[in-house]
Length: 229
Image (cartoon, rainbow, N blue to C red; front, side, top):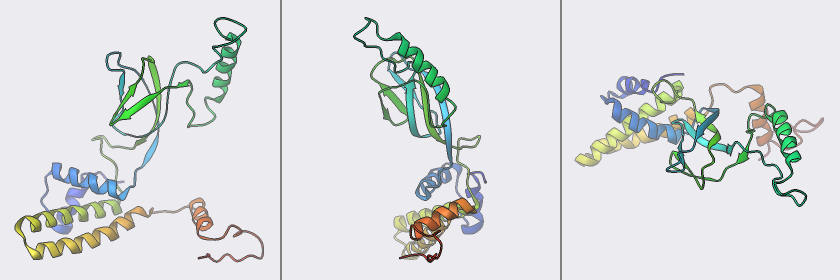
């Protein structure tokens, strides 16, 4: 894996671009989002809701939220037998939670909280106190930038060259630059497709690909293994 700032060096070597770091990061992140290769992993984040705004700021690498819960088990707190609910069900639920906690990485204990996500902030209808957030986060480096493969670096460097040539040609009405931008756009599309293909495909992934490209009885004896159209 390579550092995100390596696109500046690559764009200079291949296309002779002298880009400052701010422009390279801005254009490079646009290209990275267009490629769509986000390397994510599950994170568990525990924090307290702000009492004044009833909100929580998400971590900078948060991409998708799997669950948001608060420290309260979903037990039978209303019952016809007792005034304060069935306390025995609370002990049962706590026991079940302790057994399920390490079974599934997507599982998170507690009761689901009602929230609304606006940008990088979660807003709640009431103060739940401490909340547990299970989310998929992008793996970032020390500069809070994503790691890149060599094919992604080539594709993003080409996209930076395309944007620069197009902006210069559009501003000066230079047909030569606009034609160069069109050629770079075609090259960028090819490199973008290549960057989406993983560098290595193991046997399990290949089996999924073959299952998707062939008929359902691919592994049955005396049946054709050829892909069906």
